[in-house]
Length: 367
Image 1 (cartoon, rainbow, N blue to C red):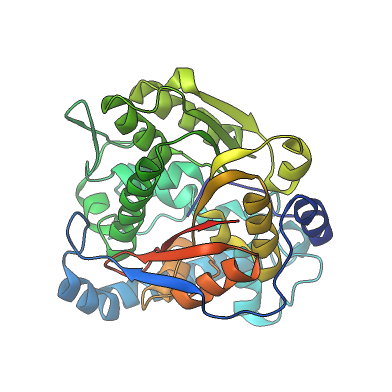
Image 2 (tube, one colour; image 1 turned 90 degrees about the horizontal axis):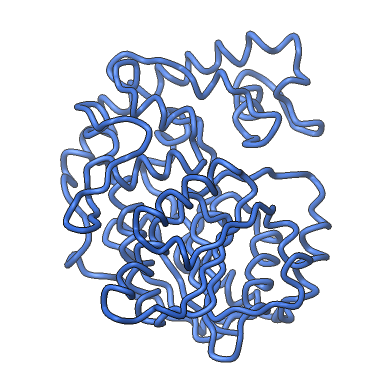
């Protein structure tokens, strides 16, 4: 889950422009990476049995109901397939039509699928309505991070900017996937603080709250005064939200926002280098070739001793619920597949940290 971005079909743009600045791909993939399973201390892992039962009962029925409603919406557009079907999509059968209607988070996105109102879910919850309407965008991420006041600045809980929490949002945005997103947040903060900061680029930054929070923590400890944080995203709404959070955190003077697609990063930052490159969320939407190219770019942009901090979701039993309830397609990778992906991109000293739910591993690597 990350800030919004526009996918295009021109894969060679990514692989050509990003690889030029990156490091060479390894010919073979071994197992020279470390998988570290984190303990529960300092992380969320609550309601395991409740959510297990919920996902196979009420959650399953609700997801099927939402899927049927979604199919009806998609089929209403079937006489005008150009409005939601990719040029070379399969589009065969009702499920094929629904898949194509969901797939694009760019101009071809069928907005009506993300605005469904469902009793017992989001019909009475402005916060959940906002979450569903902005699936895979920074606004939804901000909702998940802050729905239950998990994080604080100046001893004051941070809440979503979209709407106040309510009963329904407190339930659904405290599910295992949401808890694990917040665990990813905590791990990114920890890892960034350990580096001490430096010149940092965040790719597809979304709300950028974890990296902004980490900078705030460094400054509170008398460090981080020389950190330069460059936030990049293709959506102006994401950058506006990130800038707002940086202002609230009191670090706006060290943060700059640049509206740019990750496809054009190599050209835009051709003569620049960084101590840290962070990309937590974007790989969830990229097939292997694009993901490898992006990781190579990040590695190739590092200064001597620099480090990347990246993440990729692992598939869980709730994956189908996520797709049916939120219309949210994701490319899942196991921690082993994630480590192999980084290794294939040329990463060294790879460590994959697996939070207690096992849903949102975070990895570090050097070039």
